[in-house]
Length: 614
Image (tube, rainbow, N blue to C red; front, side, top):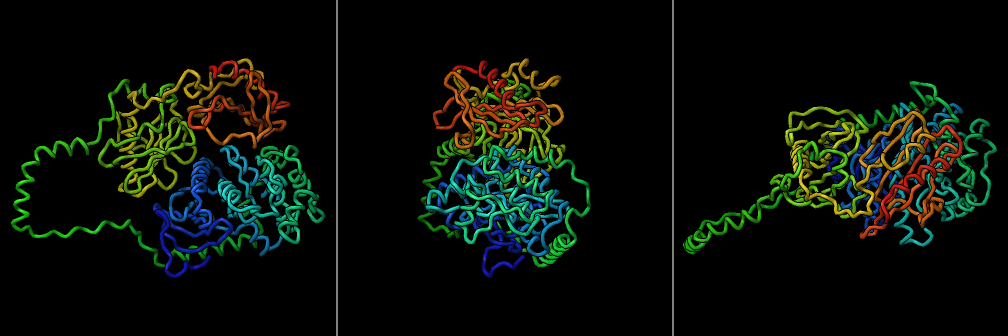
C-alpha cells in the first residue's frame, strides 16, 4: 500500500481515494472509500485502452455482465464508469495478499491449503461461468487470500482489453503467458475450459512456487504452453492428480468446475484456512488500512457549479425594454409551460396488478419505460442504445443520473426491507445490497421476482430518487405505450416453462415442477441437478465459443460446457433488424445420469417443435 502521488485527484466517480494498491498491465488500482463507507478497490484503466472507443463499449458490456456475478469466492463489482476520461471499475476491497505475493514471501502452500485453494477457485469459476462470463486472465495475482478463504478478482474485463489489443497491436497479448491456456496462446476459441487450464497452472505454482511452464522468455513460455507437457516433477502426488487433468491440452478433457468440486469433496471448516505466515500478512495489511483510515479523509468534491451572473442595476433603456417584454409575457408563459412541463405518463389501460404479471412484462420494451421526461426531479432520461438483456435497460439523465431498470428478476444478494413509500397504491420495498439504492416491487403472480430500479448516483437522496423513478415505471407499465413491437415470429413474449415437453423433462428429472427463475428463465431443480431453459436477446453466444450441432430444419446450435454431468446447448432463433439476435438456451448441470448432452438435445428438440416459425 503506497501513498497517493502529489497533486493527483483524490476522487474517482463517487469514491474518495486514500491509497495506491498497485499497478498492472490493464491499469492502476487504488483504495477508495464508497459513499456508504465501504472500502473499494478501484481499477483505473490505462490510457492506451481508454483512447479506443470500441474498448469503452466492450468494457461497458463486460462490466454489466460482471455485475451478475455473486458468490462467496468473488469480489463483487459495485460501480463502474466506461465514459470517464480514464474508465474505472470499483469492486469490494478484500484484505489480504494475492497468491503470488503470499507464495513469494512465505513459500509454497501445504497440500491441504492447496486443496482448499482448488475448491475455492472452482466455486468462483462456477459463479463466473453461470453469469455467462469467462475470466480469461485467471492468475495468482488475481486471487486474494483472505482471512476467511479466497476471492477471485478482475473477472469479466480481460475480454474487452484483449479485443482492443487484437485490433491495435499485432501479436500483443493480454494476460500472463505462464498461466494461459494453449487455445489462448495459439489463438484458438476461448471457452470456460480455458479458465480450468489456468486453475491447474495456479495449483502447481501454489504447491511448488513456480508454474508448470517457465520458459526463459514470454515467447518461449507460450510455445511450451501449446506444445510441451507441464513440468509436474516437484508437485505433491495428491495435487498432481488434480492439476494434471486441468492441464490437458484438449479443452474437452478438462474437468468442469463442478466436477472438480465433486472430486475434492467437502472442505473442512477452519477459522484460519491458510498457514500462519499468510495470516500474519493479512493482519499486517489490516493494520495498514487502519493506519490509512486514521489520516484525514479527502472531502467529497461536488461537481463545480456554474458561476452566477452578476446583476446590473437597470437603467432607463432596460426599464423600457422590460415594459415591452412584459406585454408578451402572457403569451410566452403558455409556450414555455408547453415546452417544459413533463408529459403525462400515458393513459392507463389496465390495473396495476395486471401490469405486474409475467405475461404482461414479457411484452414490455424495457428501454421504452423511462425514455423521456415524466417528472421535474428526474428530468429527461435516455435509454441505453444497446441493452444486454431484454429484461434490463440502463438510463442516463441530467446531473449524472444513472438508473438500471430490471423486470422480473430475483434478489440474489442481501435482504429485502420495507419502506414508508407507495406507488400506484402498492408499498415499495428496499433491497439492502450494493452501494446505491434499490427500489423494488414484487410481481403479481411470482412474488419471488421483482420490478427493480437501481439508482447508483449521488444526486439528492438516492432512495427517494429511486422511488420517484419506480413510481413512474409503474404508471408507464399500465399503458400500451411501452409495448414491444413484436411480430408473430418472436420468442421474447413466450413463457419458457411452456416450451419443453413435460414428458421429455420427466425423462431427465422425475418428480420436479417448473419454477420461473426469471422473466425468461424456467428452471427444474432436484438437489444439485438443475435444468434451465432461457430465452435471450444477446450478442454473447457465438460459434467461436462452442461446438456446432445440427438441430435439423436449418438450425445450428452450439454446445458448451460438455461433460458427463453438464451440458449447455444454445441456438439463434432469428436475427433482429439491429443485428442482435434472439436465442434459446438449454442448460443441464449436476446431472446424475449419463450423457448429459443427449438429454439436453432431447429437451431442445421438444422446444424447437413449439417455437413460432421464423
